[in-house]
Length: 109
Image 1: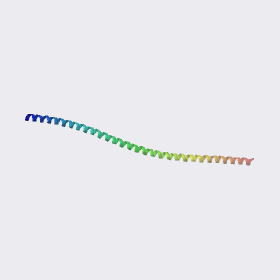
Image 2 (image 1 turned 90 degrees about the vertical axis):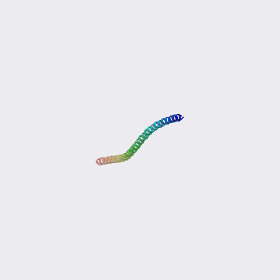
Image 3 (image 1 turned 60 degrees about the horizontal axis):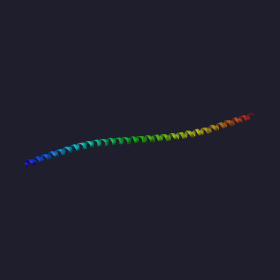
Image 4 (image 1 turned 180 degrees about the vertical axis):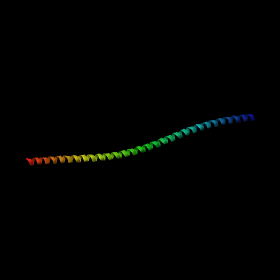
């Protein structure tokens, strides 16, 4: 009887040891998966941070380019206005020259 109890107890201990070994193996697998997931999360966070930094840099660059474009447009408008003014002055000068030449010709006649 005692041998049966001892034998039964040894069988239970052996099964419990198997369960413990399986649980330990499962625990190792879960820890490994957790490590991989944590590593992936860190990499993703780093990539997100890098993407945000790049977006900020590009946004700043775009603002600077927009400012330069506006400045160049103002310079272009100013140059167009100056050209228009010079054309008018040139036409007036030609007309005055023509008038003076005409008066000179009339006086010599």
